[in-house]
Image (cartoon, rainbow, N blue to C red; front, side, top):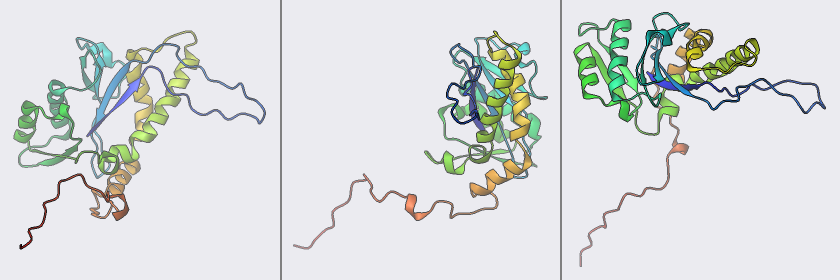
Length: 233
């Protein structure tokens, strides 16, 4: 499981033009971007859960999900980021889609973030057959399958979908209510079985590979205090 942020102001894709033409541009929103958080879960077999959205609003309304992928759900807070109380809602969404039980337990891997430390959510997951294991700090770039092979392509497809939206709605400003439709276009192109399976492979989770961290990436220096050796006087 992992989250990623999507804003209403996209990063334009690269434009291919004839040599010598320097004033090449694309249509983008002139407004400051507003963040919507998206969270999904994937399995080593290549399956995925429907998205869980966090909208930057005080109260969540069902119409926020108009155009979203089938099975999507969400919540709201003023920042648009997931917080502890929303992780419980995500946990309920996860259990509902994975259909895990104490007799059919699953392992949930996630980042060691404060928002994932809700005691209520962790107890709920435990009672429903979910064993939660967090990645060590500063290791997500190597161990998180979604970061390794899914969210990179997803962001590119989001940018492409946003470009198409701006061309089809000249003079309009993209809002957070357009994001679910953008996700509905981009997500199936990125959350493919091949991409998901590749993410688990390169992260060394499945098939298991304990050698994904090479010796050269370890620091040669350590700030831990050393204990002086005792000498006989």
